[in-house]
Every structure is written in C-alpha cells, then in structure tokens.
Image 1 (cartoon, helix red, strand yellow):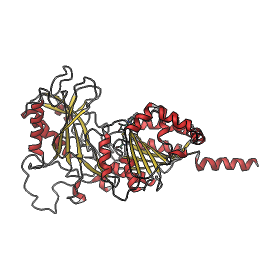
Image 2 (cartoon, helix red, strand yellow):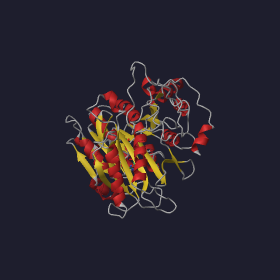
Image 3 (tube, helix red, strand yellow):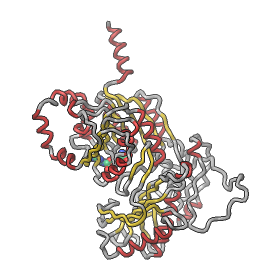
Length: 516
Ligand SMILES: C[S@@+](CC[C@H](N)C(=O)[O-])C[C@H]1O[C@@H](n2cnc3c(N)ncnc32)[C@H](O)[C@@H]1O
C-alpha cells in the first residue's frame, strides 16, 4: 500500500543548494546488519557521488508526519518571514545558519504498533493514530534506523506484542532512541557517523516484576547481543526500560530502569561534556545546538550572574559557567529527573570553573522574578508553546519590580515573607548548590539582558510582541538555526536588552533638539 502510494509521486527535482559544505556532506550510511560488502577496488573513485540537491528524497515523505517540506531543506520558507519580522523590529542583520540536512536527528521517540510478525515502528500519520513505519527515514541519524531495524527483528524473534491502543494491551508501547557521538578514542571527524544509540523501551507494565518482564529482559538481551559492545556491529550504547500503563497520550511513565550497556550517556556540546539520562530533555539536533550555544556564549558578559529558566539538565547554564567564567548560574527546571544529569555534568566541569551553580526543581511560572534577582542575564528556553503568561508579565514589569525590590531588600519583613512562600521553600529543599562564590541576590537588581531560545516560531512572535509592547525591552540581535530540516520549524536565538534601545533613544533625542 505504502509502495503504491509512493510510486505515483513525481521524482524530486534537483535543486542547487546554498548550504554550507558541512551541510552538504554525503549522507551517512547506516552500519549494515548483514556481512560487509567487498571493498571498493578503486578508492579514488567514490562508489556514490555526493548529492548536490537540497531535496529530502525520503520514501516516507507524505505518509509520515515528521517532515512537511521536501525541497530547499537548507532554507525553510519561514526564514524569509523571520527576516522580515525582525527587520520590522529594527534588527536588519538577522542571520540563518544551516547545518547537516540529512541524518541530523539524534533523538527520536517512535510509537510501536502492528503485530509480532509485522511490527510498525514510526510516527503517526497526520491527524490519526495510525503508525507509519519509517525504516529509511532521512532525518534520523543512520544508526537510529539501524537500531530500529534490530528492534524490529527482536520484537518478532522474542515474541514481543506491540501495543494495542484501543485495547490497552501488548508489551512495547514506544521506543526512544538517542545517539551519542561522544567517543574520544576516535578522531573528531569519525565521531558523528560512529554514534551509538541509547535505546529506551517504553514497556506496558507497572514495573520490572510484572508478568511480561521475561520478554522485556529477552528483548534487551537480544538488542545487546546483536548490537552491543561485543557484537559485530557495535551500534547500541545501552538499553533502558520505562514503565508506563496509563491510557493517556503521555509517552513516559515515572519509573526508569537501566538494563544493559553503559549507564552514563555523554555528549560534547557548547565546549562541555554533558550527561543526559533518557528521562531528561535532550536537543534532537546535537550539531546545530552546538552552533547555537557558541553564538549564545558571545552575548553573555564575562563574570555575569545567569538565571537559566526551563533549564532541563542545565546544559546552557553550565556551558556559560565554563566558557564565560560566570559568577553564578541558577538553573530552574520542572522535571526533577533532569537533576541527576545536571549533577553528573557538574562533576566533569573543568577544575578552573569557579562559580556558584544551583539547580532548582521548580515551576518558572510561580513567582518568576524571584529566580532572577541578583542576575545580569536571564535565559529562557521554553517548550514550543512559549513562555508562561506569568513570566511574560513579570518581564514586562521588570523595571517597576526592580525598583520595589531594591527599596525593600533592607526590610527584614520581606525576607520573612519570602521564606514562608511554599514554592520557594520547596525549591530550596530540592536544589543543588555547587561552588563557593556568593550571589548578589541581596542587591535586588534584575537582569539587563534577556536571551530567548525558541523552537516555536508562532509562540515566539507573540511573546516577542508582548515583551516589546511593554517598552521594558528592545530587541538587539536575532539569529535562526536550521534545527529541523524538512519542516517549517526553525530555532531562534533572540537577544533583548532593557529599555528602548539606541535607535529609539536617538530618535527621541532628535525630536527634543528640534523643539529647542
Ligand atoms: C525546550 S526544553 C529546554 C531544555 C534545556 N534548556 C536544553 O536545551 O537542554 C524546555 C524545558 O522546560 C521544562 N519546563 C517546561 N515547563 C516548565 C515550567 N513551567 N517550569 C520549569 N521548567 C519547565 C521542560 O521540562 C524542558 O526540560
């Protein structure tokens, strides 16, 4: 059925691409699960020439909901709109960086449906709950596709029942595949294509003692035997289980178990070794995230105090602690599972990092300004839906709040009031403090720089307009990144500064002179 559908599609036209040479490198081949083919007799003549097209050319396009655009992967149409939008707000030097166009996705959550004999492992068809099998996905890192293939074999051989959503029956509901390209024993140029996959199996049972746990162990052993450290094709980094029995659409349950392989998963981004547990948020496009982080670092003054809101495992904040010699970094995150990854990353920070670093398990929408007191820079990296309204309002009213905070810092009553608020007490209990430096919380000062990282263009535009309408902030810089080639989504890095900015000040100045 799928093949028939695809065969009626016209071949993709060839398009000359204006992406960087790195983005145009030949697509990576996944490791073969069958015996290797004989070596190329003439290594100076490549067996396949690099493609100079920026077309997706994926057999699953249209049936799978993952990609929405097939052409000009290097420059999604939305980039023009973004450039116009920022120009209208006084930023005419908006830049857009592309990165790898195929094989960029290093993290995928895939539904498992179908039957033991014919499992379907992929994404839902748009607007339905029918899963489309995507074995040759062009967005996935090739080793994700290879690990999916291995999983498919394992499901059939170990008699694992894919989940049946209507009945709530079956064993395996989802799989999360995350690639680590961290391998210091390989030359840097070899690391990406040799990435290893952390496989997290979302199992339909309450815990590891449930009736079907034998099958879980059998499937994990199969994956490790065929793809683990001692197999012919070392492709699997580790195998994890997550237990989930709820009938809602939430992919993961609260219970995680490490089954086989290395427990710690490391990646190198933003000049830093970072640890990411499968339960923690991780960026899907590792390479593009690294490019964004290196740009972001330039906007943070050396020695600054930073509040990193929506921090996940604290990757952004910690990369600033390491590269900008920050005085303090405060990370705020709602998912408590991310704390362990944060702590592991902190353990590997270079000894020279001398910074007060804290991670707080808290909701940024509750008393958002309290996290920013004493900070020079606030970084926000919210989910696609954008900033919480309470945070927008707090940022809009930041000047008045600062005035109030400064005048009340001396008052002993205010400290008492602060300490009685339940969410502040809870966050303090659930925080991790590293480093000896003290913060300047008592100054009552609030950030002069706001850095907004967004993966949701529509919500970003709204949030941006709301922030600017208050006149508390002006937009200073904006950059876009091709985080999701094949879609119309881009990642935005926007830098706001307090007040109305030079252009407007100059205009006001001129008017004043005329009047005189
Ligand atoms: C786009 S991710 C960014 C994570 C991190 N900055 C990174 O790059 O790895 C958004 C994060 O915000 C967290 N989050 C969502 N709502 C939140 C809230 N109200 N308060 C604090 N964190 C929240 C999510 O759990 C997730 O880790």
